[in-house]
Structures are given as structure tokens and as C-alpha cells.
Amino acid sequence: MKAMTFDQPLSITDARKVLGDVFEAAFKSASPIRIQRGNRAIRLVPEVAPEPIEILPEGALTFSDDRMDWLNSIPQQSFKP
Image (cartoon, rainbow, N blue to C red):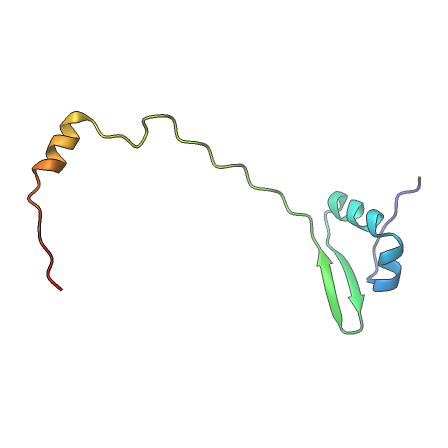
């Protein structure tokens, strides 16, 4: 199968006929692909998905006994509206 290049803006009609090829070209291309209808246009620019956020190791958000004793020793304040 011949690789398609999209150097010029495509019309909506032309893009519909080859939509799968348009997306494949967008994923492989370093430059955006532009689909135009009249004076409006859509740019297809591939995006690199961010790395997933690492899960914190077990116990990462726990307090030591000394820290808990210190937190519990702080006098409580009452707030009046």
C-alpha cells in the first residue's frame, strides 16, 4: 500500500474518503495535518500521552508515633463564626 502524504490542506470530502490514512499520517508525521472547510480548519497533531502517575508506596503518607504524639499535643482551638 502506498504511503499517503498530506502536504496541502484537505477538504472535508477528501478527508472522509481516506480518514484512516489521514490519522495514520498524523501519528507518523512531525508536522500537523490540516483539514479545511471554507474558512474553518482543524489541525491533527499527534500527542504523546503522559507517563502515568506513580502509586505512592505503602506507608508513604503515614506518621511515625513521635509525629502523632506531637500532633496530638497541639492544643485545640475553637473557632467562632
